[in-house]
Length: 184
Image (cartoon, rainbow, N blue to C red; front, side):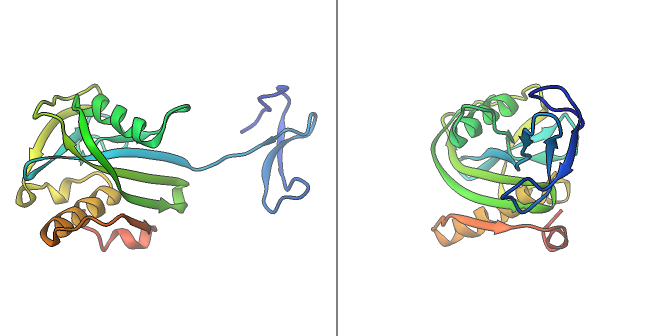
């Protein structure tokens, strides 16, 4: 950040009074510009014994498979955002959504939240951010071509939980050193 969004003057990095970390602060009007983590929301859509995945048409990781997800928008709930992203990327509608996984990725200042959901009907198609959308049985998941470790972890939890017949909420911090342990 270089300029204040309140007055247009240059900002500097310093610790504001009564704070404990550096922030962008306007030297002219003293506006403190906070930068907070981005929230990514999405669904793990299920139809019978298959899960719906999208092949990414955009960076990062274009050409790789993912669960439908994206950045939350202002003025929407996490569930509304997950539903919107599922529609935008997979042209699919879901129902019975339950918050399933939450991942903190502090090294990139992101939080991921996936809802386990049922497809309302077996209708889906590639949206503008996907080149392809398909339902996969567990044994057909393209594990080596998944876009992100959070997707691998969510799918691994899902298939293990499905075998156990129990779907507990899962929260976890993922750091770069954890990624090697996940299927990629």
